Length: 199
Picture 1 (cartoon, rainbow, N blue to C red):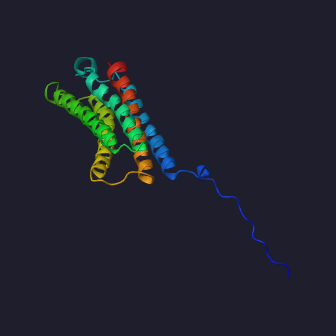
Picture 2: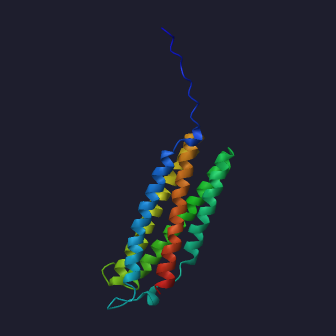
Picture 3: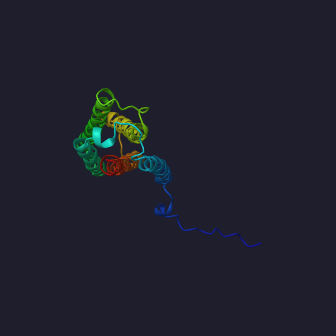
């Protein structure tokens, strides 16, 4: 009886494997795009349909400083990722910390704006259609900034405690940066719809 010969299969290239983390994050982002699309559509649909004031043109001012901070944080998180790839731990922590500070300042400016709208302009979520759609859309975005900041802060704490973020951990940090870029990109849409088109 002839001996069975083993057939050697070519090694599976690592580059052909699907990165489940990237696929999962891409699916999450598409889901979030659908969610934000609903809120943006509702805001646009109800522009000018409030029966009583205050109206957007009366109470909204352009959040220029907040926007600069948030969009700049996309550049700083990218610098953090580049530093991590080059094994520059100190620079990574510095850029990541700066990203967190910029994101926190954006939230602070949002809180200041809301405080003014509620206490001085008497605009709440129950005041009129503008108030309902404004707080829903801007609040939805702010909640995503809070989630992103929490994850970035956790990453910084891990790095400051001396844990190695190379290999698989580096990939996770990169995926987190994708999420942060998405949050920044959504703000461009929200800013345009609420503070330019909606006024």
